[in-house]
Image 1 (tube, rainbow over the protein chains, first blue to last red):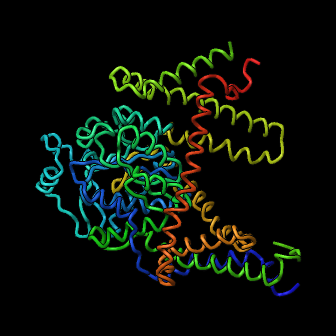
Image 2: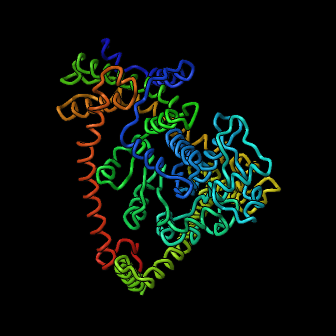
Image 3: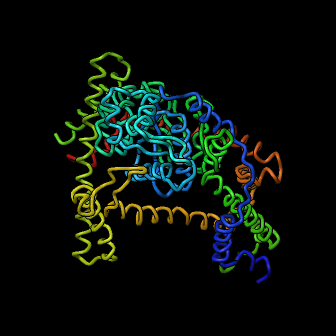
Length: 330
Length: 222
């Protein structure tokens, strides 16, 4: 067995070890290389930047924990942007497990130990303000602070449940749910996951159907993108944006070119680009998890390319392309 | 009867909702709203059938001590236990679904625990394994054996380097060429596939609506 054959027969556990090291080391020795946002991600950012408290968006957590490493930072970044601009957000899930993912994202943004967190105000806690008939965003915040509440030092803002967010959760046959919401959101989700009637929520009273929604961002590890495009964009003209895993991203360029989507975050890179935009425009003091994760991807991609090149050199140098049959592959 | 009634339902329903799509009248919308309310209810029966069928299959396996029958318990126990904790057992007794969220999240019931500490790590782990197997597979199988394979290999390397910031350090053109590949050759190929699939779906759906394609009946009435 010559050196080339030995090289090609290397125990795959060595490759696993190298990948393991490539995934772990960058967490301890960050590279922090600059990331330039692409036009696809800037498209989503600019669209949300043009919205405010009078608008409303849907954010779909249409993925399972398997793709959370890629999809979760996208969802968190978009929610952060919306909360910072006081844009009401309806949060849905295309899969049963997506509901838990959505709750985790909200938890991450409202966790007091995280930088730039948002102070969460429960539906019941601001009932007195609603009873006074105050439902506009600025008025609610004014009344809330007048009650003696003050924003903690490292908090970025308030999130009023029912005014800034409605966690609607999962329903089966979600394409039908999208179709149904084009008539009335409450016909599909009479309550949020906490049991609060949607009809009572100020954000619902101002935006009763998908026709009154300004953007739907689907963070998907599934076919949710196509459902939102087919039944949201094409049926009622709802602007749609995608956050998809890297392997899915290639499938959805057709919708960007045709103008059916306002933009796309592709994989961890797309999420990191959105985090860079948020950071550079003052929406967050620190970069998020995707930016950190890009260091891992830098090294892992280089390593895989290195392995492919080495494998090809050994393959051709050993003459396996012509004659010799490789023995004892593992 | 077993064949003609389902065929008639599909034909009438299919034609009705094709027409409905193009009629922007209130009655048409009301009909459609009824449909969106009914469809998930009808679909729920499929869930009952599915759970019933799965339970029967695995309980038979256990009874007959078929090969790997022990794993059937791993299917059946969570199948009934998780909904029990999620829907039936009250939150006060440690079950229950997540009912609050964000800073006010207090629920730490069994359902929440199993989701956070079993389901999430299991799925994340399974997906993470891909990185290891892809690296190993790329090393062993990604060969420039022919001109087409070489084009594929080069495109993959350029896109991979274009997707990471370190690629830009190695060559400013990597991201540009990578994006060009995604935006043009990739897009052209994907559009062709999407159109092909779309036309195929349209043809199949029309065949089902008009009763030409009957495989979905599963041999009923034969």
